[in-house]
Length: 436
Image 1: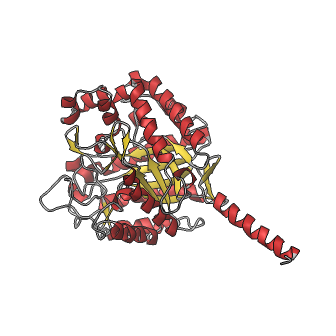
Image 2: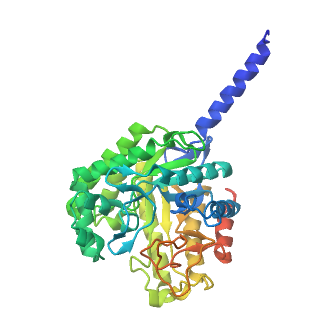
Image 3: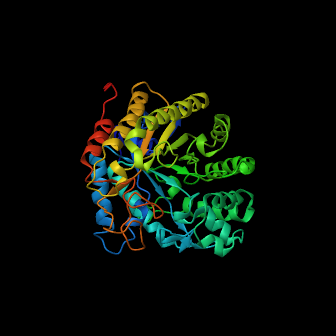
């Protein structure tokens, strides 16, 4: 059959356009902004850390049906950027806390590949809805195993200390050892490589080629824990971020940082950590109750102080982002319900005002092409509800926004929180030229 030249040209144009659109579907960084499909990318998102675990539930109603329903709900509210854990390390108690599961790394260097089937499903469902994921690759904290588990596997922590509840100072002393433990860091990198090399069974794409992923995050809230570990911590960030970039040319990389409050140092050290070319953007987390800016028994009286400290905290990290010419994401922030209640039926007046404060900063940045590119509130609980008379999570319970070591309902935003969702939707669907 003779092919006409015009037809060939049209076919080549279609193929070029198709390939170009695939390339542009990854979120990229240009200076202080994220860019998606050639346009600045500003978003309101949420923390949905258990999203990759739902597809593993045998009961479809509790699993994939719930996942689809909740993703549809989030999409309808304009929330299309979701932060989640790649997988847990180990099983059983850590520091007196029952961790999430099933584990991705069941034992030192032993991986349960089927656990990533849940992440495959999650990413495929995101693709259908044009949503993006930020995936953290391990955890500074006990609720998914994380650094403490790597230390235990390499005999840096006695089992008696590892399993039992730790005082804060003990936890600091133990976790800081991770950065001086070469086999621990090697085990962590084995998990990183296992994830990056994964081929999604649904999309048939390697995770490193998966456009539904916006960014890899080194860990959830990594800290040196003690100033004595600062240099080793800094080197670890450089080594790991460069390692990921060498394996994956498509995705952004960030640390997963809370900001300078976790460093016992001035802002310059935070800037140094994010100055590496292999670190694409800055993150901060903000926790007024956890950081004693607001007391549980006097939330209303302390609220203005919490607002003032929050604003100051954001502003100084905006300065750091401007100096480095990189985007800033406020990727965790939360406030308890009124009267420090865990009841989903209780009011959220102060939380709603707090969300307004942070979203207003984000909206102003969006309107002026500023550095604050995203705001992921903590955390989405969807249709799950706390069990009456039970404060903490137990194995077999539905996951919600609060991880196992926290009171269930403490920070979770449920699908029934109408006033909160009105605020989220107002900002998430706000046009750029809308100043209100």
